[in-house]
Length: 227
Ligand code: CTP
Ligand code: CA
Image (tube, rainbow, N blue to C red; front, side):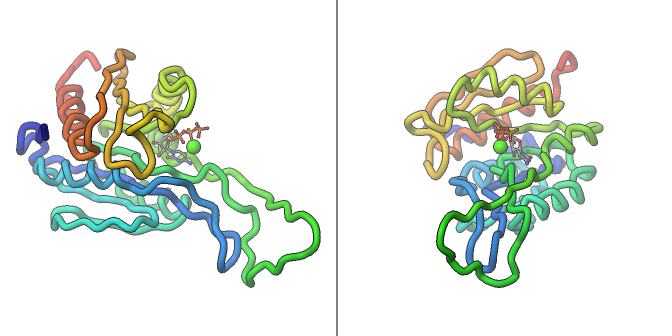
């Protein structure tokens, strides 16, 4: 059954969320991206708005719509554009959640004209993008900063490392190869871990319901002086 949390428990709060993949262009007809569809991030944005928050949603290229007028949507394409949008809004927000699947690498060169095929191999040189979440962690002052971890192996171990390294207040660890979880699905399974290091399982449920469960935990943790 649907759990919708306590209505209004984000009244007056400002929430910044990033969702979806990024696309990194190689030429006018080709790009690198990943399997993210933005569903979890959009579910979080909608739940936050329904709970009374003023929401800014930074969305990568996705085919989803938002209907709630209290969600301010900013569309971006690349990791660099997402970096700019997140940093522009970061200081004005109370809760910041990075649900986006940001490209870790982009082509070192972007061709102005379409690359024509040639005999033999084509080796595309890739360079690292900035880790947006890590830079937000470094800039953090009063914000409650939440990251996601997409893992296919050792989810808890890798997730805990990301929580510490990126100076997060909480991480939502997704085993993206689990049945009923991950990219494109309407359901998800995750583990929420705050700075106490104590994992809390969120069992198989709709992404909408998971979003409300996540905000219930964030609300609890923001009130906990020991965290
Ligand atoms: N993230 C980000 N900027 C990047 C890469 C990741 O902000 N360039 C954020 C994601 O939005 C997510 C978190 O970092 O909230 C973890 O992303 P994930 O891909 O699981 O971890 P990485 O740190 O990129 O490590 P790896 O992909 O090697 O597991
Ligand atoms: Ca990554």
